[in-house]
Amino acid sequence: MAEQKKKGFFQRLFGGGDKPAPTPPPEHSVAEELEADIVLDEVVEAAPLVLPPDQEIALEEAMHEAGLLITPDAPPAPPEPPAEPEPTVEDELVADIILDDIVEAAPLVLPPDQEIALEEAMHEAGELVTPEAPPAPPEPPAEPEPSVEDELVADIILDDIVEAAPLVLPPDQEIALEEALHEAGQTIEGPPTDTGSEPPAGPPEATPAYIEEVEEQQAPEPAPVLPVPVPAAPAEPPKKQNWLQRLASGLKRSSDQLTGSIAAVFTKKKLDQAMLDDLEDILIQSDFGVDMATDVTEALRRDRFDRDISSDEVRDVLATEIVKVLEPVAQPLLIDAGTKPYVILMVGVNGTGKTTTIGKLASLYGAQGKRVMLAAGDTFRAAAIEQLQVWGERTGAPVVTKPAGSDASGLAYEAVERAKAEGADILIIDTAGRLQNRDELMSELEKIIRVIKKVEPSAPHATLLTLDATTGQNALNQVEIFGKRAGVTGLVMTKLDGTARGGILVAIARKFALPVHFIGVGEGVDNLEAFAARDFAAAIARTAE
Image (cartoon, rainbow, N blue to C red; front, side):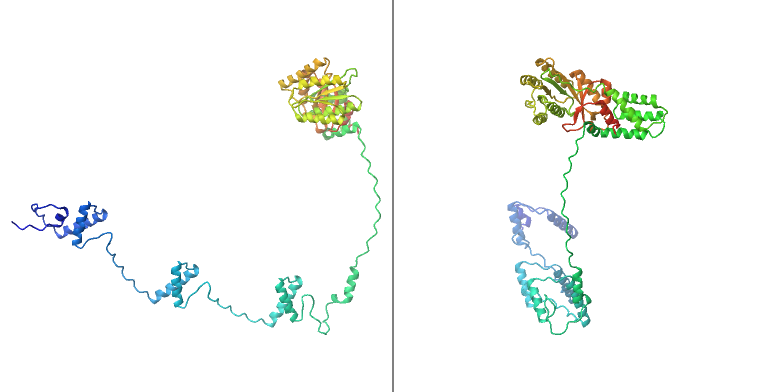
């Protein structure tokens, strides 16, 4: 029996039993083996071999026999690093300089154990530095001793500073200074102590004679004897203006604008067409209307054309034409004494002054001895109800009210019944402000009138429309609509003092010929008067001066 060959490495690793020996592979050359080793190394490095447990044990045994076993518990020792060359004297010197610079720029901060070791090493070298014992700073160079001249200059400067601003020191420093001055024979409170010698002669300002002379000059003069004040006579109370003066004052803005413009146009001696055209423009801009402007210019053309004329003569002609228009409509409101109560219904748009006018009428008629009752028919505004109540307190007139939001026609019905029951002479009913172009609001006003007539068929006996003069040409539209829907019987023009275009009253009178009962030129209770055409014309054209 042939001798059995010893099993090879991989036969023992993977087994194989007693098999016939395989045909030996062809021998490889040295170059091929070297290349195979390189490839094998790269593969092993790129992807480590992973084996089953039994094969891994067999591989470890085989590698252990060959002296190549590497395990995680005993990794191969790394190769020793090459020994560093010893630094030269120059290298150590440069390193010390760099280390000193770094330490000075950013002090070294070490863990406690390393800091202790560093201190011990520095202590052995005699260079230990600790926070408790910092190195002594270098002594500053000794200052040179001042010369006699320097001391003299310093004393002079110090004297000037002390005289200009006395030194203020803390208490401890002040005590030390006093002791030093005391040793030198000086004190803060006074000059050096007297040594018995004569003081040096001072400036002439310090001599006793000079001081006495100055004191005599500065001696206070005796107080002058003031005359006993005579009590002033009490000022006379301002004289109360009459109606024409109040009217002229209220129409001042309108008259200033009008007469100033006329004076600027009529600078020539003879009246020509250009001057008439300018006058027509002025009158239209003042809200007199086209018709009134034409009447005035035609009167001037007929009587004064191509003749010498002044601005005063033009204003006289204007006043005459105004009187012609206003005199037929200037009618006072006549109260029928046989009709009780005499019902006056006040209508108008918002802000025309209805409530204020009612208060003034109550004051006017109350002063005439008539019993006046008021009805707060503007139930849409709580402020209007309160305002009318205030007027009632001032004039002594009872006020019929309902909560805000109540039906205005129902309040008017109750007010007429109460006025009849209490025997009131005059009942003035306020209504809510409404725009003349709002049909539903105007229908409510018509309803109030119908309800009043159910109680008193002849009522309302007067329906007064209040007009705000500042509204200008819009007032013409208000007169037209309220006249048709509410049966307006007369006008009250308010706020003539608040506009520079007071000619609107003339335009309304010329177009509608409605009676103008009252005009208002202020908020005062006495600033409502019966309308007088000549007074108005004289005030607005300024011919009363």
